[in-house]
Image 1 (cartoon, chains in turn brown, cyan):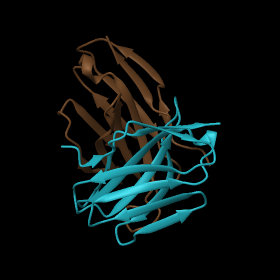
Image 2: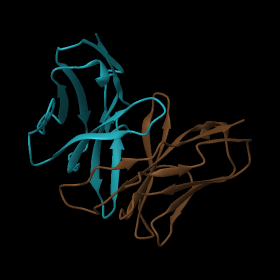
Image 3: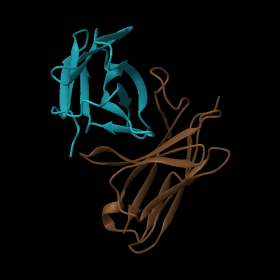
Image 4: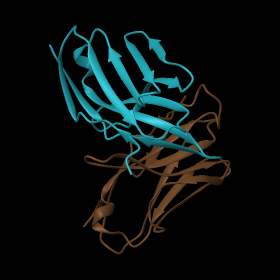
Length: 116
Length: 113
């Protein structure tokens, strides 16, 4: 079974531009979450999608947005890029929407975004 | 507001000995706790988890302990192996109608041969 894939793996943009990152979850997984990882900050939760609906959102400005398609693939968009947006963006998928088992998330390798 | 804290940025342990990674949290509404391991240039991989209604979960060399009254959990690795050298993230899940997983900043474990 293929894992979570993210494209592109690396991206260089300049301030003010916008960027779209893509994530394909594991087949059959309907929940997709996005995280931002910066040195010393761990993984900061951006948002979670389930069945094309955003169910939860982290404390990020409105420049960060996302969506999920009917095939569970998800995209994340950042508009008006700032230098501080340079980070590793990770996507994770999980099988179940609730319950007390099987809640682990499977992460993709991430997209390394550099804003110059 | 850091709801999940890993206060030790790094830990060094001799091969064969026990590694203990600690994590503290502030939100009593977390219902599930997880540990992830991350190697450089890879995404985190799930290691072990524990429901908030349990106090211990064991999987091979890995055991997670949960102390709800102290809002503290720990991951024990026995015996430690050089391949365990990685960054370990503690995470806690919040169910608010949707799921939000809060991660700690991570602890880098070095296992010396």
